Length: 527
Image: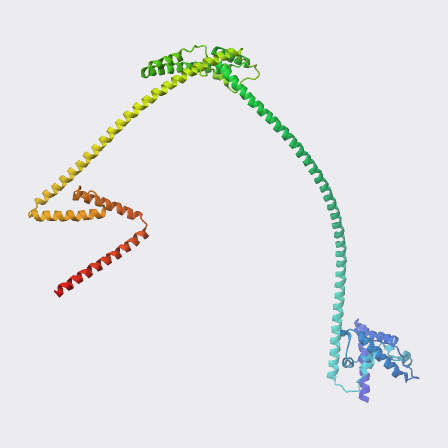
């Protein structure tokens, strides 16, 4: 008993010392824990549905049953992670914290005077009757300190997290404000974009209308241009026709009148260059007319020399044309240029149609004479061509005959040369020391037969009797050269295949000959 009382007193003194130490050093953990226990006890006193009355102790059972029912109902409504078992509650000894001490018993002289929680003192005093060693006490104190230290670190961590949460909340609020501002700006941008798109659609519609109008105008203008071009083409066609007629009439006009018109044109242009251009052309036309007259005179002489008197008379009619009449060759071509001055009023030499008809008749007469003259010339040309053809045929026949004679002479020369070579060979053979004419003739005959066989195989039966052995050997040699050239032109694979076939045939021939020889030898042995 004395030891238990000493332990209780020592424990209470330790709590008092710890409380004072916490107050002096600024650590509010123990006081906070004690205050938390006091507040929890006060709340329990207020929230408990029953009160302990000393006078009525029999109601305690009923109140306890009601509290248990209420606790069961509360446990039913609690979540899974909030529930606990009876053993865990007994281990934690949480029921001791729910005890309440009446204020009448303690009054002002209770543990509150010392700043101690009676529940905590009760917990510490519980089990003080059991004996504990100093090592266990120090271990308990160490565990308590570690728990307090872990609680303090967790509280600091919670505070740090709270500060971090506050900072993040501020950042989040700023981000929300920024997002709202961005959303408002984006909405404003969308409104502006919609307005711009509407304006662009209006502008595009107006532009399409303008484009359609412009295309319609362009089509209209292009149609007008095409109409104008067609009119211009028609007028140009008519102008060309009229120009042809005018040039034709200008060609039919006399030279003097053409010269006067050229001078008028040069004076109208008032440039010396035109005069320098016109005068040389006049001289050229005169020279060309003189050349034409000379050519006609020369042709007359040739026709008179070759043709008949009727052709000469026609040519004389052709040359008897009066000089006043104008042909197409005698006209001035410088007035037919494309660079004519259209400002000048065109003039025509012919005033009456009868004059033009008279010129036409003269031109027709000239054309008829020229046609007749050309026909006569064609007939003479045909005669000349026939004569030339006959002469050419005779010359060709003579040339062919001479060539044939030449070939015959050449062949005879070759034969004579071959005979001379053969005679020379025989003379050399006769000059040797031992000579036997019969054996030599037999040798020559056998060689000629062999040469004939080779010639028939290589070339054929043609010209076998007409050629001597030397000529046959020459032809065989040339044939071998041709065949060697052909072999070089043939692909290598084909040549090898043909060689294999020929070798196979040779082996078969050798086998056949060997078998015949063996059969002959066996027959001789039997005999």
